[in-house]
Length: 417
Image (tube, rainbow, N blue to C red):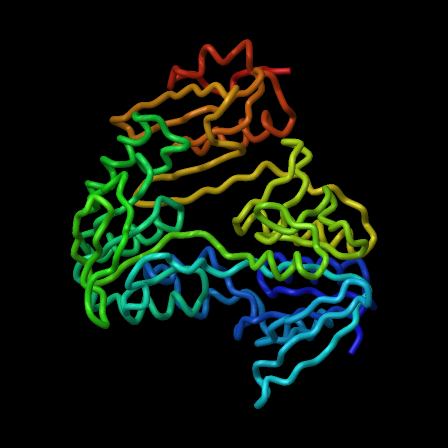
């Protein structure tokens, strides 16, 4: 088999790239290979399914008819086991065939949009029933089936996925122990005021946060009954939600001639790797960020969609720089939480916070060399487009930053150069 464009990964980055290519190239053959058993579905809506907000069928974003109409060939349950950059071919295993038959496909241009799989939780007893991650539709279905028997929950981690688990359990009025090894939730980004606003909200929703603790062992027989931490302390629970990172299988790509960084396959600002005609997009890409002038990886749905589009442009010959201020927003436990740009304090980074705790409002700005680099917000979403514009345009806020600690200071009325 031979295709002009081959895409590894059937998530939002891969499918967006395929559809973008088709808009620009009406005749070039396109093939998408994915390990998934399902067509494209919304990972960001998986929590909404578990909260009862939407039905399972509403998760799906494409049908076979859509791909047929676009003349995009999609192969489900296909595991790519080799990539030969010099010969421009991939080898995949057909998991639908009786003997998992191997096949080879040649390409002119290749996109890696394979994302990653949830890391194994490095904890004793992690094979017990009742432990869940939330990455795939299969994970969501397993959680939905188990939830009716959940009596007490444990959430391990301090990520946005951990927040989703907290709300899923809280809506069912299940008491929750939150175990987080950092000094506070989002402690790399929040100061003590922001942390207390979060913690007060947790407690209002039946969540007891336990910081500077790490799960060392899962207790129980075949089924979860609780956890033991490093303190040591024991917490009871018959369901555990784990919010941990992704394994992107970078060794696989490195062994096949790809330049990789700490977080992904290295690309330039056009999302092209050092191998001409080979691109990467989404969670797997460690791209050159023209705004922050360094390589970085961003792992969220919006970024994957935007990178898929830009990769599609470049693969089809419309040379386009990927330019985007990374952000992530979530409405959770009654709070609207937004992370924007670079949001970690460090050497040379000045931070300024403002808050109105009775109204659950909080904002922390991250400034370096007089230029806005990022912001973390609770219930201050209206400032997002303003700050995003400042970050993208590298606007100096040196003359106005003295007002940032005042919660009544209106950023929309500010004129900056």
